[in-house]
Length: 158
Image (cartoon, rainbow, N blue to C red; front, side, top):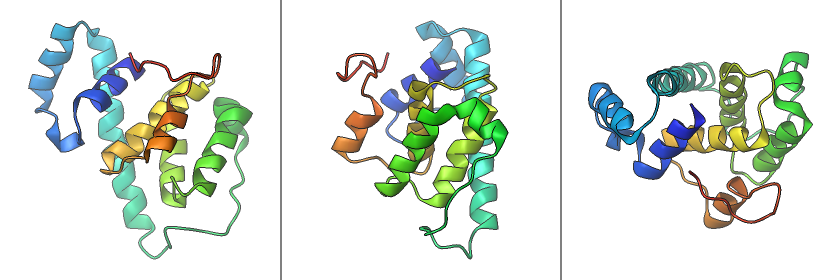
């Protein structure tokens, strides 16, 4: 699923630049992605749009920034781990994510249905949340989002 998401991010400048679902499925299949991975990725993106809509409707009175402190539930801690939670806090302190986007990232990380989400996958989730909202991180933050943890050099997206 994450390879499909990265491909969409690299290929389409904005979500509305993507072809309709049927054409997109055909294109992704022709490139070589498995049908199950395509289905998971497109379902995940559909749910991302729904989640973003719910959060924006529920939080219209909230300010886009907050001085509050986020306490993570035990399930969130289990799935995301210390490194991912620390990275989310870093992005929020760097003003890359606001509290609403943070909550969307957390919800989408849990929706990936993995026992533990790697930091690399969390970075893809962050990019997809920003991409879905038409926002792109600045150059330095983009490098941070695609820095390989093993050798501290930018990695190829796919």
